[in-house]
Image (cartoon, rainbow, N blue to C red; front, side):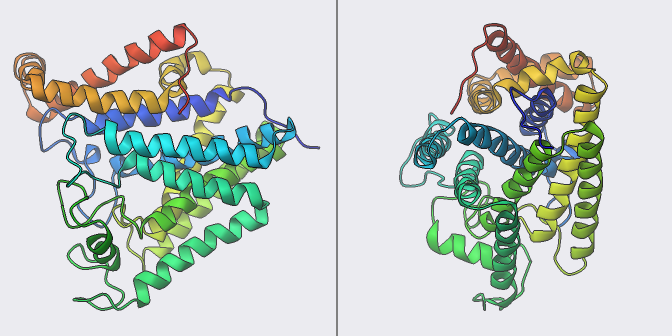
Length: 363
C-alpha cells in the first residue's frame, strides 16, 4: 500500500518556518560578539547557527519530491516541469545577485555566490537528478557527488599547500574560488566564499537527502513507519557524520561530506519532532507562529535582508539597540538577542498579513 501526500504538510511548514525564523534571528544581531550558538563556528566544528542553511536546503528537497511527484501524477510533462524549475532557479539566482545587495550594486565587485544563489543551483541540479532517476539513482548521485568532492579535496595538488588541506588559509575550494570568482566574493573575506563553487557539490547532496525523506512521506502510509524511518535514518546519518569527522572535519564553509551527513541527520530528527507534534499529536495550533513563517519563507528571507539594510542605513539599528534593547537588557549579549528578536517579530507581522489573505508568493 502506498500513500500519496496531498495538500500542504503542516509539519513541513512548521519546520520550514522555524528554520527561517532562526535564520533571521542569527543574521540580525544587535552587536558582536553574540552568544556562541548564535554565531557560526569560526572554521571547523558547528553551532546552532550552522544548522540553519542546511536545514533549509534539506526542506527544499522534501518539498521538491512531494510537489513534483504530485504534478507528474496529474499528467504534467517532464519538459514542462523542467522549464518551471529553470525559471524558478533563475529568479532565485537573480534576486540573490541583484536584489539582496541593494542599493550597493557595483557590477565590478558584486557578489556572484550567495545563499539564494546556492539554493537556486542546488535545487535545479537536484531537480534534474530527481526527474530522471528513481530512489536508487538518487542515492547513487548523492554518494557520487560527495565522492567527487572528496577526491578533489584529498588528491588535487592545490598550489601553496598541496593535496588534502582543510585549513582556512589554503584549500582547494578557496583556490578555485580565487580563480573563477575573483572580485565577486563575500565582502568579509574577498578571497574565498562560504557559498563557493567546490562546496556546492556536497550541498546538492543535502537537497537529495531531503528528497529521500520526501520518498519516505510518499511511500510509508502510517505515522509510526514514517517516524521510525526518520528517527533511525536521522540517527544513522548523525553517527556517520561524526565517524567521518575523524578524517574529514565538520566544516560549514567547505560544506564537507561529514557536515552534509551530520546536518541531514539533524534535519531528519528535527522534522521527526515537528511531524510527531503537528501530525500525530495534533498540536499544530501551538506552532501556528512558525507555520505562518513557513508559508512565505523565501519572501520573508529576502525582506529580512532589505529590512536589516534599512535599519543600518537610517540609524534605526543603533538607536533601537542603544535606547530600547540595552535599556531592557543591559547585558550586551542579551540586548543583542532582543534586537534580533525585533526583526523576527516584524517579519512575522508581514508574514501573518500575507497568510491572513492567503497570499503565498512563489519564486
